[in-house]
Image (tube, rainbow, N blue to C red; front, side, top):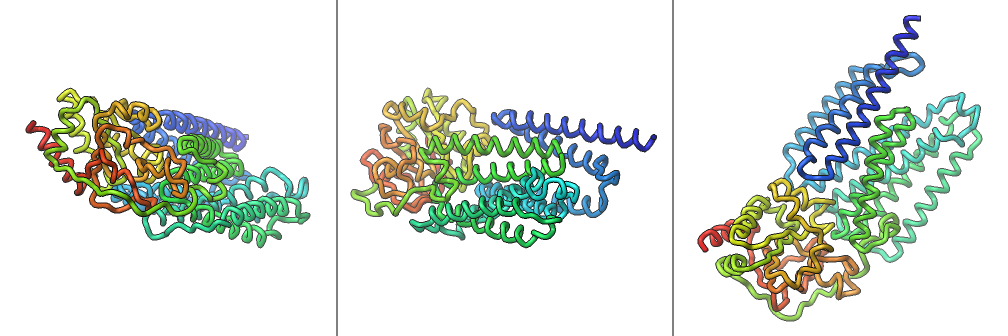
Length: 478
């Protein structure tokens, strides 16, 4: 009787711990919606995850037996914690998109491994009752497919973001991907309709499903153009969340289920919103034809015109309205703090300064928001591109810092461009345009930017950080 009482008490503690962890996940996600509370939200979510792990190790039982191999589990957790901590501390801001993609891929891989390990051990009682056609097997198969696609796709995204994997643009790719996707769905149905005494008899089919899912994950990300990579990362993140939720179903783990649902739903909503903002189709993301067609025109008519730091300082200081467009180059130079110093100096002179934030500026969703929040730029100064575009004709100076594709007129003018149809910051409508770049190199989409040859554009060449420091010095003297 005492054993039954202790087991019931332990189970109650476990369930309560999962509920508390789920509440902390929800609160943490809510706080992540604003830069001022994001750090605290991340901390609360981490506490929830720690609580869920500790409760599982201490109170989870199966068939009346506690979890075994605790030493190995804690040892693996310790090794993983040290590796993750070192990577997170040492990673540069410019490599943050790669880190996000890598960590997301690891989550997908973990979900896929859980499914591969659990499939041969489906309960014999369940097999006798309903065969392979049951919710438990479906959760395993979905976790395997989605987790494998997320892992493989995230690793390809990592390589593309890091610059050692290029695009694979083949016109027939969408049909290839649709065929593979149809095969995966059909194969899942095929497995679930097998009449076998034990799931272990179909292990070879699971391996085939895993290989095909990995191939699909690779092929659906390979054609994605650079300007569209943030949307794909968001989609892959949602995949990992859904795969984790499948694990929650398998283990009846409410915390794992809640966390997976939150990540999956939030990632899906973000993907849909970004697709809408980018004027893209979600179907095209899934089948891997996101990012437009052929190459854009590479020849540019006209010549570029430069501006000195002194002249730029005068132009900015005597303007009424200035808009700054941050891009990946700002992150590379780690110039967000000095950029914020410049905008404060201009505001002291009575200049209204705003930041135009494009949905896919940088290499991951919200990249520029994170970058500028690190420099304590007030959230109210960050304006989405579609909201600030109507005011462009009234903008005295627009300063483009390390951004390229998100201000490229080819998105509106050139149907052959890979970024055609993508909404942009309409920098060319401003009265004056200053573009800060190291040189005349092309952006991540590797296409020419006709904005640089606009009559209103003046190029300010040099490293963004050193150029901004010189600009701050000149503004202070005026």
